Length: 160
Image (cartoon, rainbow, N blue to C red; front, side):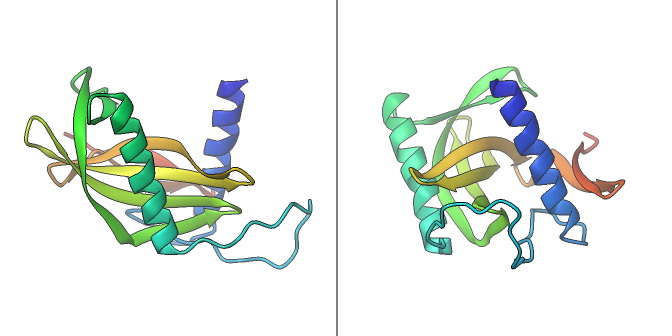
């Protein structure tokens, strides 16, 4: 069930990126439409400050459970990174779908390296929930970029 939800979410994200009509380093805001095929309960619109607070709150709560750090598994080194939030990029907070948001944040690891993490969040009647976190950059070097393939945006690893 979880894999099906994740596959659906990723598919939706890629469809949303296709609407952007550009090659973003980070996802851009999707144009708003007036027609809804399936009416849903309205949620209050979020500001960039709300999204930044959502990330900060998530990191604070998760860090309390994990010894004071946000722990993210790094598949490149096959170890977990112990991270401390240094900045939420308020200029890189975007709505990428209906109640679906993207944000970018900087973290410092206990190995003294800087990491840029991409957060995807969904808003529902329970509030803002982080649905995916990925390591976008290590020490300023991107690990992936976005490329359009047959009308869909897909994540492409960069060469090392």
